Amino acid sequence: MKENYKHSATNQSFVTEEGIENIVTVASMAMHYPDLLTETQLKGWLKNRKNNGLEGARAILKVGRKIYLKRSEFFLWFLNQK
Image 1 (cartoon, rainbow, N blue to C red):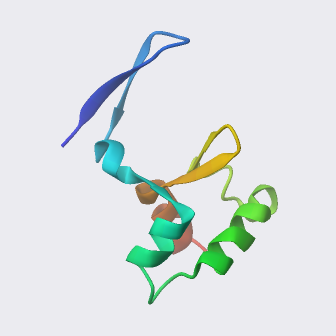
Image 2 (tube, one colour):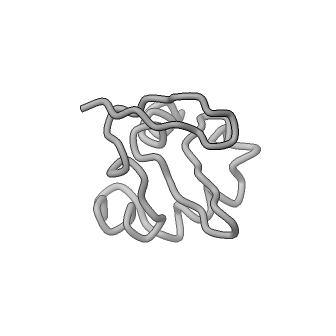
Image 3 (cartoon, rainbow, N blue to C red):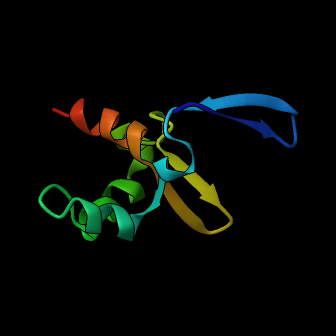
C-alpha cells in the first residue's frame, strides 16, 4: 500500500511503499531477522556507512541521535553486497 506524506520543511509529497512499518530500530531489525543479522553486525555496518555504501543507499533515517533503518532500502543494499 502506498502512502503519501508531506515533508514539513519543503511541503513536498513523497510516497513510501510500506508506510511507517518500513522504519525500524536497529534492535528491532536484528530481532525480526535473527538468522540473517545481529545487532552488533548492524551497528558495525552503520558505523562504517560512509565507506560501505549504506549511507548512499538511503536506508538510514537519523532523528536526533537515534538511528532508524528503512527496511526495504536496507535489504536492497544488503542483497547487493559482494
